[in-house]
Length: 91
Image (cartoon, rainbow, N blue to C red; front, side, top):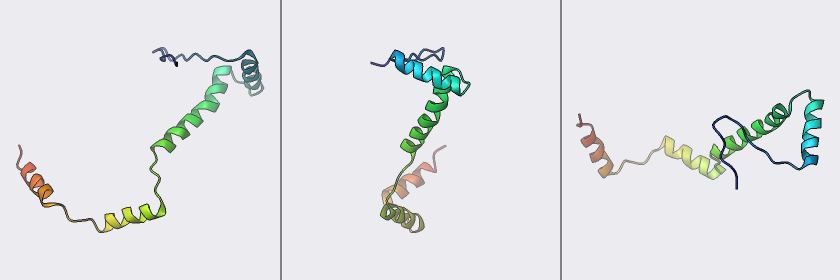
């Protein structure tokens, strides 16, 4: 079970010794410390994953439907019109 991230910004990572050695060697080759090396690889991936999750993906058919509704919106239901008029009289 993952541990909660402490307020101090530290994250614990458990690695097999051979995996840590590989990361440490790669970081040294790039002249980075281990934190910089891991963050350099992980942050762009995290940002990409977040952007992908937040992006709405529509099929071509759905895209055309949205454009059609924007250009030709349906009439508002009478109940909505009444509610909007009543709300405009509120202080």
